[in-house]
Amino acid sequence: MTTRSALTPALVATQLSKCYGALQACDQVSLTVLPGEIHALIGPNGAGKSTLINVLSGAVAADSGSLLINGRDVTLASMQQRVVAGLARSYQITNIFQTSSVMDNLLIAVQAQQGSQFSFLRSRDRDTALVQAAQALALECSIEVSLWNLPAGTLPHGEQRKLEFALAWAARPSVLLLDEPMAGMGPDETLRLTELIDSLRGRAAMLLVEHDMQAVFRLADRISVLVYGRIIATGTPEEIRLNDAVRQAYLGDEGAQETLRC
Image 1: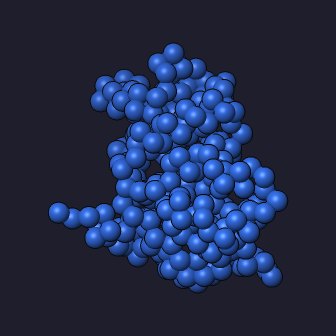
Image 2: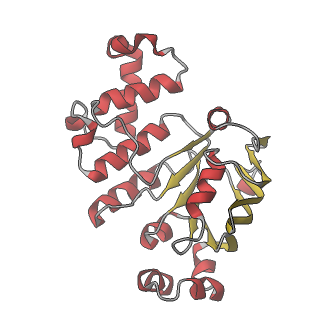
């Protein structure tokens, strides 16, 4: 029987570095995400987490290092080429079509995933197969039917974040980068999105950047800790809880310290 560890890693970053002038935002970061796992990336503000996500997604070019997606070298690949290789991402700031309906957002995402031409955008809602796929995506991502025809920008913040997750999930990625998906959410909204992500566990590798430590420790199979652009520890949630270097990195952050103590 093949174990997860024997499989080709979903993502392998090797000594990725990125400088902005004198600031070393990423400093020889090496990171492996296994197929189907939820791998959390945590660290204090300014640690370089968003820069690393931007480098991994191709939004920002690395100064040095390499990146493999499912064994394929995408170090020099564009964002779109990385999507083709199986990589998708969400953003800290909600990135949806605000004035379009929820269903139109989903239809566009499904249409893009299927590689359809956009010359028939006006008639996409008449394509039965496309509509069925968009509806299935909505249900899969727990988007209530009552919201489908509303302008996306009128949804509560938590529902907008869920929609953005669905747009990334529409690409059927093998690797999904989640950049602070719980940002700006209340406790109930955070719980619902946490439950959604948990329900999709094992269907894609997920690299989760998140400040909500309760969500991190509930979801993560493994956790890497980034401090001043360097990964100082990687391990199971229990190993990270007990790591003295990690505790030191979070001194002064009472919320994180409380979660690490629990």
